[in-house]
Length: 484
Image (cartoon, rainbow, N blue to C red):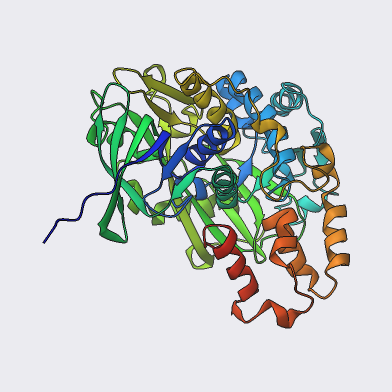
């Protein structure tokens, strides 16, 4: 009996390991520059850190007190870029900060907000302002002692969807995206890598990739991958910080969010969330366990409840928590700031390029807001080794479904979003407005693909889950990654 010959390796310019926001962003940028890309992710896209965020695209107001002006400026610039290219999954959100007289003085907060307004050009969001909580809607749920406050703007995001859209755009431009696929071994040669990829749902299924470059975008696993799989020198150091969130029944009826100062210096948000709930977080504590098994502790729940009870009239405790999630943030282990608290550790990123043989790029750190810039810088460094001279493009191209008023990003995408929703409700008047709005927020202009040929609720098919019909599931299987 003849033996089955192994299939030849799949060849590409870049093999990207990691399907979080950084890996997906790099894949999108690279394919748009004409590079061939394979991306593998051991679980689903955005299964870990990238979907366990506070769901914000923001400049990082609190980073100002740590003098990270460069990071804040970069994040503020990116906030505007991302809102234009993905207006369906990123939307403006106003924050109210009640002033606690026992903490930061009012003049210092005003100075910080002035810098926040002016460190980068701002076209889409209103400036900060002082608010009288005795007359402002946000003051009603608060204890009477909080009479003054401040308001400023950032943006909310569907973090998992942002990852999916980047991966989807990469795939539509030619990238091969493999979920539930683990990179188990690599061999480094002078001009290429040979990597073995295994299907995590069927370990007997594997294939080989021959790549000119390897990108380690494994987030909290980056140091371990570098040492155990890529065998690239001494183990690098990452600082792992756990951020946990709780979800409770909604604590307020208005559409603004809150940012609270804790006496220990940490910041906690209370944000309007899905299905009439409030999202509260995060905790920022050092973490030394397995990132795959991270979970909230009772101490963290108590911490978040205590802070809410410090400000709100309505008290909460563990019994009010209806959901929770935790994620591990892989922060750059800056030796100069090792003694800083977890909340003070920098959220900036570092790109480490190893050219001892076939190039290996490792991503350390990062945050949702700056992922596009990180990806751009990463591909710049890689492209120079591939003699690729394609210029930057991702700031000038909408993510899938984001082209609400034209192919190119435009302020109208953000400022006219309500107009677009109204147009879709008029066009698909047989759909409940709540369903139209959900489709628009998730799929943007691709609502037309989802609803093509359908003119009634019956034609959406059976309801497989509350508000989820067979037509949507079919769309995801046919056009995306089959995930809901």
